[in-house]
Image (cartoon, rainbow, N blue to C red; front, side, top):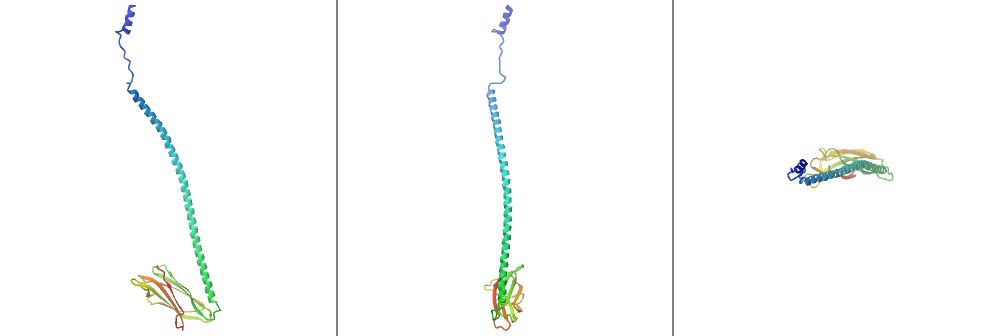
Length: 237
């Protein structure tokens, strides 16, 4: 019995060995661990939220890009339609100009033939129906178109001479002056016709000479003065 008591005193008495119970981590690691866990949790939640936001933005960008492609397709169609309409309008405008020009030409032809066959005129009359000067393809080149008609009485053939004199302003000059045409002072041509006579030709304006006008004179054989005297402005190149 004594031995049992002695053993109990040895283990639980004042002389028993002391046993210290210590935690695995120090106490100051607990708040730090909690803070790290909190930060990780917040980061995970933020990443999840940000990921959903980014996916939403990507979806919106995809929708906007799809709508943009549709609008671009519609814009291309509208531009093509506009080009077609402009081309059709240009063709229509050219056709209208052509029809108007043809109508004017026909009116001129009708008036021309009416004047020729106007038998109410007892006297014969020489008239200038057309006198035009147009630019040609070459630089300084022009062509002219002349139509002289015989109105009234047509019982006689018209004989006469047609003279063309070119006027231009040289460099440093003020007033137009006569310019030689193909080495000649003017162009002369004898005509003999009944009803009408058409004359077409070309001339070149010398270099460094500003365009002036082309003077036409027709003198019937035996006449003391010109039956026709008309000038037309030369268009600039």
